[in-house]
Every structure is written in C-alpha cells, then in structure tokens.
Length: 213
Image 1 (cartoon, rainbow, N blue to C red):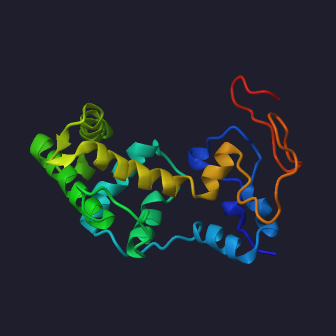
Image 2 (tube, helix red, strand yellow; image 1 turned 180 degrees about the vertical axis):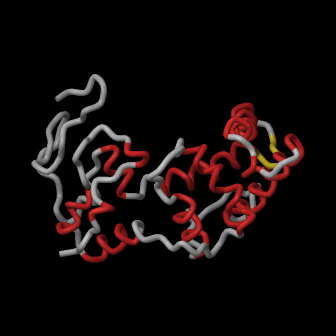
C-alpha cells in the first residue's frame, strides 16, 4: 500500500472543484507499480529547477499562472513539471518548422516577453501588476488569432507552444483530476459503469451548477 500524506489528499487547484470529497489518489492501490510511480512523481517535483534559469522563471511562472488562471494556492506545479520535461528532452516529438526545438523556443519567447515588458512599462515582467502582464500575453493571443507574427515568429505557433505545454502539465496532475472527477488510469482496474450519469461506486456526483444528481 502506497502512503499518501494527508496534505496531498483530495486537493484541487485553488480548492475549486465540482466533486467535493473526491480523491483520485484513493485509487492508487489499483494501479500497477509503474503507473503509480509515474503519477506519484508528479506530487514530489524537484524544487531545484534543471532547465529554466532564474531570469526565465521570473517570466515563465506568472505567464503560466495567467494561462491557467492559477491565482492562488494550492497551485499545480506546472512550471516545475515543464522544467523537468524539457530537462529530460521529453518533447512532443515534433516542432513547427518555423520555430526551433521546443526548449530553445521557450527560452527565446520568454526573453521576448521580458523585452516587451521593459519596452512598454520599463519594468521586468515579474514586476508588472497582473493586468499589465495579461495585456502583454493577450497581445500574443490576438496576433495568433489574426495570423500575424510576434517578434518575427508565427504568433499562432508561439501560442500553441505555451498552451500545449501548460495544459499538458496541468492536466497530468492528480489535483486537476480531483477537480474534474477523473479517477486516473483505467488500467488494470478498468471501468464497469459506462454511460451518462453512470458512476463507479468510488465516484461522487457532480455538484456543479445545473448538474444532474
């Protein structure tokens, strides 16, 4: 039986969620050892980053918080998960032909975001208020929607890089699973009750507004 500290049980990002009392980690005893090891590693991310520099962290952390709406604790450690992934060279196995490899693309785009902050506000990105940070990030998304370039790079591809890594990290974490009532890997346990409003005995009903009980 794998020991899970009480402080790690039933947590959701910013304590938000529609499935009160649900804890996906209660299912760890049904996962094989390899699967359990992969998932539990995400709860114990390294505090010492291996890829991003301190200057890059100062830009990347607020950027990721903005992209994911993480404006309070507990936060899914998205930056740390991305850092681990890039340090290990675990990319998606492809990259846009007009962008460099993902690690280099992350470094360059963070540098440009810092440059934008200095140019427009005469302060570093991390020293801006949230509204000022959001304005600079919104500019990239707007350019992405219009098919234009940002600092000479395809803004759509830059936006994809940021959001792809951010969402992959966030939704790989058990706290995000608690928030949406996901029971984790189905193998080898499997699922018995398939269908709308059909729940396993360990699942809880959706308590969101207008949800079926």
